[in-house]
Length: 244
Image 1 (cartoon, rainbow, N blue to C red):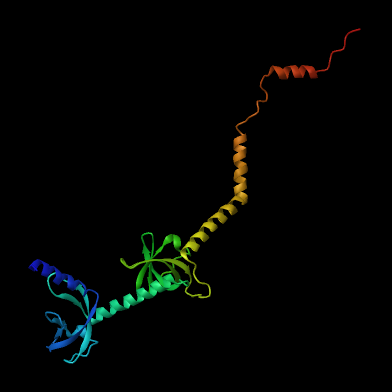
Image 2: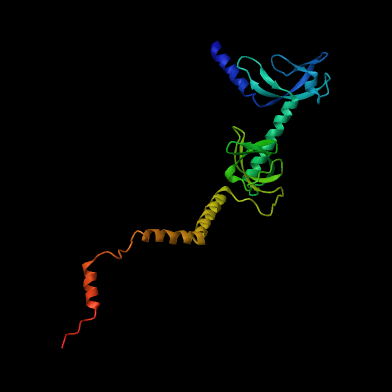
């Protein structure tokens, strides 16, 4: 095999390490610096404040995460503290997806601020988007617990779209309805509003007003000269008596 083929295979094998975790040990201790043996080509250097939760001895074993793999050489390591944060955020995301796919699609959160087209909502460490059309109350309750229903989640871009359900009291006895049923309900509400508007007094008044305006164009021609009317009037006059 040529060098180029071997080199491409070497780099492709490194990509499999992305997102995984490996066990490491302390190789050397210095004043503020620690030489960590990762089992790869070269050890990495960490500072003492970066490994606060790990007891720093030569017998210490701890786990590091691989964040990214460079094209030419060693992968970039993720230290225990940020690794724990990323792991927690992934666990929360999986729990949110379970809630989204379940029948009881209800979760607590609060509105942070207004953004273009809606509001930013804080839910379990993630920022969700609440459209203005899906807001329940006209008043905006900033930093107050509200109940939301998850409508859509996109793990690739970390996007969550929610709908406001009510105040901060969760009611598990009445599960949230699926998206299709919610859309049908909104359509039925619009039809009901249109029917009620037709039956109102103001709607009927507007109809009668329009009819009057239409009939106002047909103005009767009273007082104008018509020969037929003159003959009719002559017929109605009393006849003159003949002289004896």
